[in-house]
Image 1 (cartoon, rainbow, N blue to C red):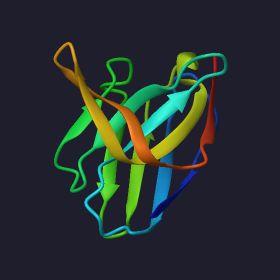
Image 2 (spheres, rainbow, N blue to C red; image 1 turned 90 degrees about the horizontal axis):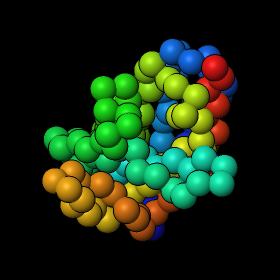
Image 3 (cartoon, helix red, strand yellow; image 1 turned 30 degrees about the vertical axis):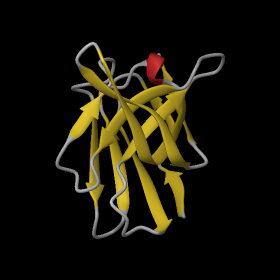
Image 4 (tube, helix red, strand yellow; image 1 turned 30 degrees about the horizontal axis):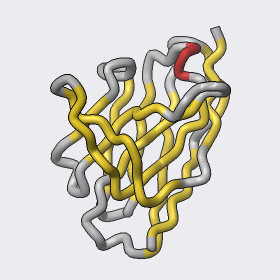
Length: 127
């Protein structure tokens, strides 16, 4: 079993930056992929970024590539999401996830589900 706890969300102006953190506990030595999803009010859950368990491979949604960066500190059992150049459309609850289900869509890998989920942290970007 894996428990995930996100932190670092908050209110930021457009163009600003935030760094989200996700601390994992439990069976953290298992080679789980990890990533981030987000869900805005009235919208479906959206894939944001994913990382292989060692961090050697990363994948991003087209809407965030170049602005958001996922990284994983395996020694500290923590995954991060560095968010730069934030836009109002980035406003959502961001969820950390582990043991991702990856799906290939039009040549791009995306995570569509996960076995373990965090509680979510709110990110609000004002215009």
